[in-house]
Image 1 (cartoon, rainbow, N blue to C red):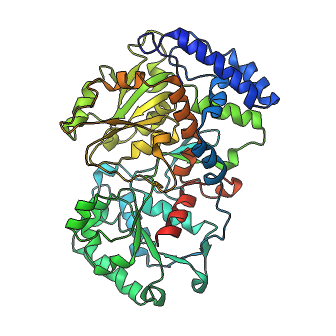
Image 2: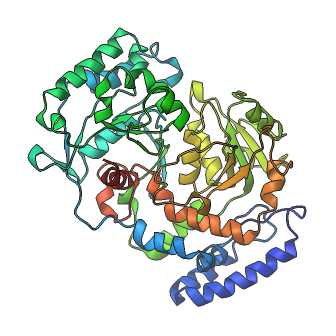
Image 3: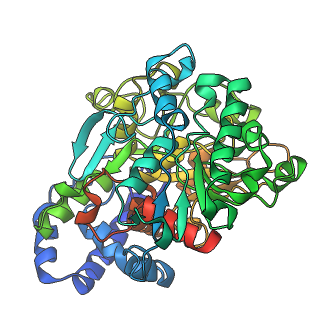
Length: 481
């Protein structure tokens, strides 16, 4: 919930709403937290434009959460209690994994747009800063191969006894290989060598479940997938699964694929969690609820498709400044909607994008080069409600749809066949029409599920019984293979 200018919502309605929600807070929260809320409520001034609600509103809004999300908080968010899968990791030659990651890190000429990929910290890259348990790393969007290799290797699911394994993980960086070999003969040769090795393994021949990763979208990996017919015996985890028509065209419609989150800049470090509940509540509120900007669009100026160009043109104010620098003056040009112009191909934008998202209510997420994109997950993990566009005859598959209802924490804006918004109004005006109660519901639900999309800092996940992306992926493997 936010405080918007008069043209969005009369201020008196917001005042009435706050009074009602404070009453709900008093009913649903214990006395200690109520006292904590009261002691902090005076710090949130009505005159402060675009402030996400103070604690009396945000905590009270938990009472408005629907039954499904209540069950989600009590069941889905906790780690699986049934018997864990046992996953055996093949000890492959380094030419299939670490040689590839080393090639990418050290030879920019092979993939210059990756701008010096950093696979340190188990694939997460250099630590930039932390806010409580939330840590921001210089994580590349195509680092899934490396990250999941380390996540599985350090997880409670790993077994060194192949005879007791339920699933076999093949740590081959097939999705990253093209950055070094550009789909030349070396790529095809490595794929053949991989399956030659697997065919010598008795469990592969017996049809035991085998999984691997593809660090890029499925469409861009079709050459690798078609390089050997034995791919049909592997289930791969990928950041984007293509539509059925595309898969039929290449004969891979029956290929098992699990859609997983893009690696975000944000990872949780659970060693930073405190036992002090009041401090924990304050930390969540500070970084998740107090938001000054109503609508953020963080993207480059590349017009990768006509619709994206239309969205870019809706933003009069465009800046390359960091959040604090932009808002340091009370005379800033616009506090309603801002386009943060990023320069991802030359790097360094990661130092400011997440801070902007932490301080925005809605984050616009139009299509880029493909229907899915990394910024969508940065937005979720920043607690900024993602705003996506629903095109006709398009069925984008997001991660964990079996367990999550995305309508509970994102906004979908319909687009007609002509590539125009169905309501024919600017995105900002569309979002202004959303009732404050619905914004509160979306925010609350987003906070409930955001940790399900993050890959935690290695070695700290055992300090929390909350699920994370790896736990969710394992659940998907359990029902898919």
